[in-house]
Image 1: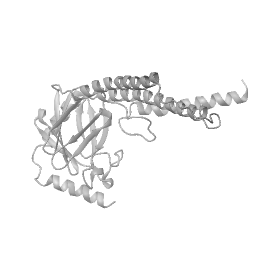
Image 2: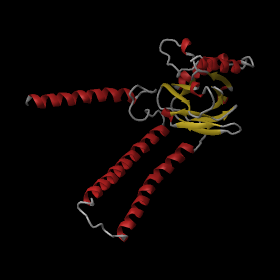
Image 3: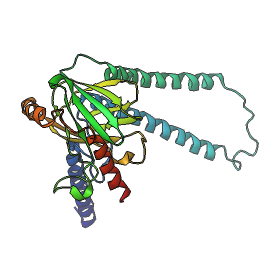
Image 4: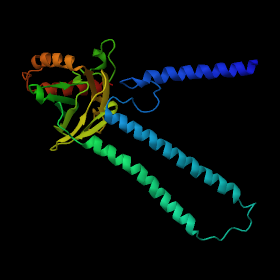
Length: 288
């Protein structure tokens, strides 16, 4: 092996190790990471199916794009003016017209079938093991646990000046949602004012909270971890300050948390507590 070949091999090995380190860290990440490539890793069956469909469609789209680009380059070179001073007067070709009609129909059908199956899978609502109700407010989230004594709490953004070591800027909330892994959770969505959107990429969930309407979906979290999301519907001046923080724990840990939460979040809050929370977040935003 000569020096040049040795350097090339060493370079390839170095690149491989770096890529492995990057993607291995992202493979189980429950939050966005710097220089992240691709979609956020799935933490639910729905998200896994969405990513699987996305990857399959990406291959189809890439093949079509390369094919069309190749045709354009071929036509540009093969039928250039210098090579064809007398242009062709061909007006139609029955076989080609049938082909470029039938082939796209077959491709679209092949795409539509798995897409419809995924839509049905994500939309079907079965009897879950528990229910979580999500209510959007300007500009915070309210969560209720109707199957566990109907306690509830508000989740507000932690202002930057109050962050503790390890907490993430504009991502952590004062009261994270706690959910058990391996359980089918029915999610109900409502709004107290305007349209918001509860978006969790790791769960494959993105649902509007609409005034006067109750939307629903479901999720089953596959692994323990802390997951983050955001409001994905422009809902006012502090739209950017409505993070979602979900802690997925084991069923045993969830039961322990529920016992504590029933006492901590008993309905004894003062009536204007939500308003104070909103004012606090607004003041933080305007101070930027």
